[in-house]
Amino acid sequence: MAGKYRIVIVLGMADLPGWASKLMAEHLEACEVYDPKWKDENGLEEKVKGLGKIIAKAACNPGPIVVVGISAGAGLTVEYVLRHPGKISHIFSVGGVLNPDPEKQELEPLTSTSRGFKEMAFDLAKRLKELDFDEKLKLGKIITVYDGIDDEVVPKEALEPIWIKKINKIESKVHLVTIGLALLTDVHNKLEELEGKKIK
Image (cartoon, rainbow, N blue to C red; front, top):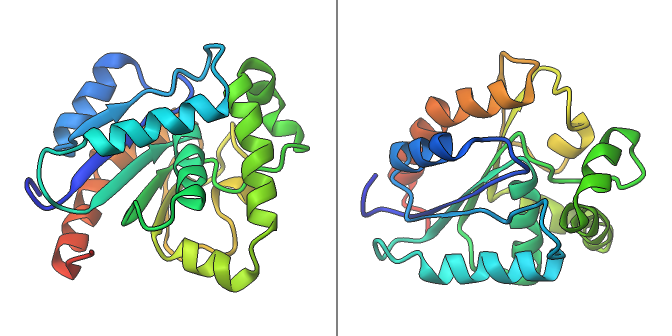
């Protein structure tokens, strides 16, 4: 895969310890890893700007940008795409919060512990509501989803919106295990498939 894509990994809310993030980056031959630091005081705007800086910095090769968004990191990536269309060629959402409903009780523990996540949940939900279904389908074409069979952290509607067709199920009910299995196995294979399709 080296030289084919500028791969950026966007971390979620403490889903992976530092050593695991480094391992995943090496395994996927990523140019950069972006840690939004979800538990700090910075809000959504700072986190979106930070992602933009990391994408601009990802220059390990001249290929298109592919983002692997982990959990909340996938939602932040979609937020970035809606603000900056055309900057990212493909998103791999690994246990990702893609279609948040801020009123969902399941998301309350996340929104109550992170200002940035709470702001993202409300803003992303608002931006997605402004899109018609065809626009959502177009967005969905650049997203490949990985989800467990019954995630105990994120509601299914947020993980698997109906406007996304490329959904891969992992035989796990545990959020963190799903992430690890997807990153260590199938994401690598799907990146090779993208290489064959020569995405631009």
